Length: 571
Image 1: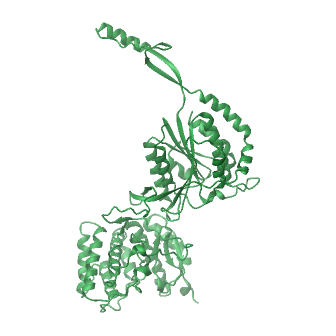
Image 2: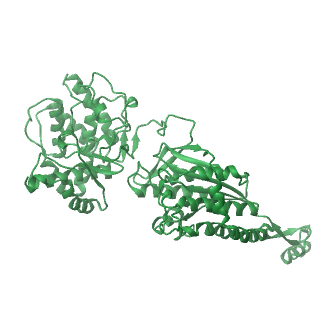
Image 3: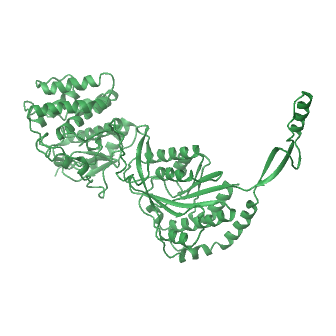
């Protein structure tokens, strides 16, 4: 096999990444799919741009251009397709037309910024079959005249589509208008009694992606294409099953876009028993309403003998903390002025009395001041990151102890310290499996003693899944609103930056977590972070703000450092 025919994505990836970065000024992740290119099209997910590992339809320099064209088109969608279209009540042929119009819209925007892309994309339009009036041929002809405004077509339907498209975009790029145009053109196809083989349809030309991510439903392309005729039956997207990526360990494909619909339906799941929270999308600049679903859990109780043995190693530390906390329990000096009685006379108040008497007014005789010890009134919610990475064994630990073990020890030591201070402590944790399943675990509540049941729950839990931090902070902040303490604090303990299986771009969840922290502080519950990730400085300051975090380089120091940090924060 020659070098030309063996050229594939593995060979193209290095130059493609540089090419996309030059065009869009940011990096894209390219993922290979082994399914034959003749049976699939590229597609876009939160994990990145999925391209065929091998194209067998082209050779030589044209093959290299095909990878460039496919990658550039997908990147244009990522940049400009900022909404999703509502799928319900649309026929398969209407779905195909609307997606084609959106292809034309994003390519038009990309060409405005980078004119050379027009020539690249036009090189993959096959002139054969131009006289055909099959629906697939008409769609390709429409795509051609939309990409090349100087091109004319003798088919009235094609020219009508071109006219409607350019009229809708005459006052600026408008994705919302495309749904109505696509519906109208699809109705025309129905009136023509033209047959649309939705089951076998593949987007043309070959460089374009399957456009599945444009829709608000997780319905698979195969199910969208169930009917041979575009208007025989309507496919109910609610009954369909998600498509899975061949190379992504069966993780679902996700589309982080706002839905282009006037409906305010809850998109976070049909079960209304679970609280839902919005999530900030930095790329679109708005919140996705009711996007994340919180599932509260109380862990089972396991044998806490090992945890108690680990805590026994810190007996001297506990005694030292007890002495510090006993002094803190005495309270913080507070100066009270304008009192009717007190320890000494307030000079300013005495001057005001003399001035009032000389002016003929009745003076305010509250002229004393006194100092009282005010006992601190604080509620602290310790929020633990329980993602799968906390199960990692520490190589520098003598007995290969896991990070989660140190988290347990630190939590209990902090709990003992706070109980001695007379303040309130709750211990909760979180982990996530996509936006529909953000698990929120409750180990200890305010007012509950640090008893064997709490130790048993902490001992029973293992690290699992991912870290959707923003949703967990929003839920914790909501719970803290019921606290009657004068001061409230959420203390987040984590080992890494936010991530989840349905979000490819790591910056998305980082910006969302920052929004959650800012909102919580504005509502009276500041959030402080303790990270055991040595590389955390790159992102924790962006999430929590300057001076609102502590990075601990040595995880083994966590049990000693966390209670001491509490003393510092509440001094």
